Length: 479
Ligand code: BG6
Image (tube, rainbow, N blue to C red; front, side, top):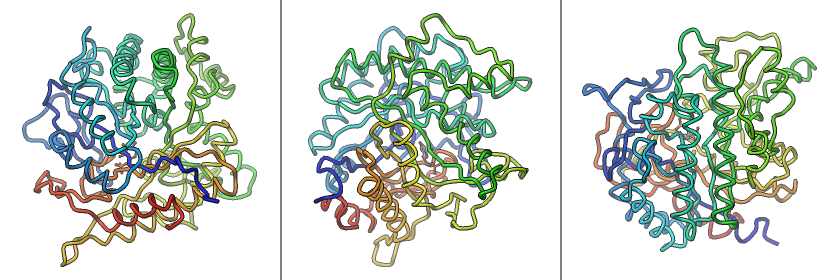
């Protein structure tokens, strides 16, 4: 008997702001990403006030999917993808976010994309907001600090749900809604929620107010979506970087238990429909005054999600009584007491490579929530070299994906986890989110573009392209 269901959703994952380009085409407005410069490993991206002529903004052009989508989707078809997870750029539909009417050209663009995908029998899986917010809502309204932005988000969600209701079944609300828990790097609050912090503010209190508004926005979107089409399947999307205790010292165990609340806070609310006790206690102890409106309890209860989509790239470790510099640990979620795992190697960008951690994550999430799970991001960001014969032998990427797929199959076949699908991140090379680089490549298809924006944009299939095609064909039997 096959280990995976015959309808297992093998696919690829992308995000509008990182690959579409066309930042000023088709009536699109500026998004929070359009004012982010390129950084590199160890050098943060800058968020500029306006677009400055002497700075480079890699997301403006992405990989020019906007103008090349037919060629790219044909390649996805050839790879055998059964689904494509991508996002809708909010700024194509409501360029400033607060308009009464949507931008028809933007809606038409996604009609074209969805139709093209369906032509190749590729199921569209859409994220409503993948780190995407109109710049105007961030600057003029303070992003999700402001409850009005909840209404604008729901209007956007309703518009796209209505428009694509007969073509799209799988949706998720906010990408990696929980990665903004790491307030040590300003880009996370900015890209998730359009929020910048004033000097005298308590980042944590701001974060939980923003989180509340966003949780309400997510729940309202789920309820609206189910009203518009009861057959929609709507999930949340979280980043899961499991936090291991350093040792069996009970203090390390408790340290990890508490630290993992950073990972679980958002899904606890989105799945259960109410706040967990540890969060309410923490608000009380810290004197946080999180503003709720009448009816919020009901909204959260009625808007719970039906599946959990998550990204998994790495794991991390915490040690009781260890104080490390937050800057050193940005990769590990800014945890002030995270330490290196002596059993695990890291990528060039310092991301721990831990396939067993994926099996562990699948078990932890399934046992905690008992909902279907969907791995919508997993992958290996690294540089690629062309061989003399013009091919790219990306064995390291194949090995990474193989080991993570094996671990996922074990979770299904041995642990009984309900897993809907697997979509490797950046199925085609795109702009890196954290660094804005092109050379941190995840793709199974190479794109000729460098960190400074030079290159022909030519697409080349890597060895992993053919390997993954066979994985899909054999439904994971041949890895
Ligand atoms: C996730 C995001 O955090 O990780 C993606 O949802 C991102 O947008 C991916 O690209 C990989 O991160 P990076 O920084 O290597 O591109």
